[in-house]
Length: 179
Image (cartoon, rainbow, N blue to C red; front, side, top):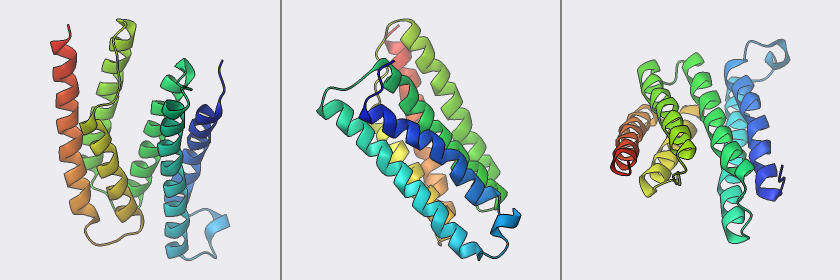
């Protein structure tokens, strides 16, 4: 196993996902009873932003210093999925995110993850496309707005759903074209 700095950042993100879920969905915990919910929003947003920063830097460092590893190709997308899953589940529990929007996003994520596994098993490249990167940014912005309970969060979530579904379509089309 090749454990380099980018992979360590991905593992940090893996461990931040349950913390984020706890801050969002575990508010009835006795440990939080004296903390105002707005502070929990701030802490959850801080954890999410820090995790998102690790997502940027692990990829950047891996490419810049040629530290791309098989472990990194597995752990990085897993950490991303766990972070978005924790965020979206917590936001549904808080009733800040429409369950259907989250269902569509997560369904696409699981389907495309399965398709990526098939592509890898066939020895095909599974690099992210530009629309995939835009999808990630759209989801991150929506999560940020919803976590902070800012106006426009629901609209941003549905924009993220549209981009997410379109990027899934593009991924399927690309996969089928390469067969």
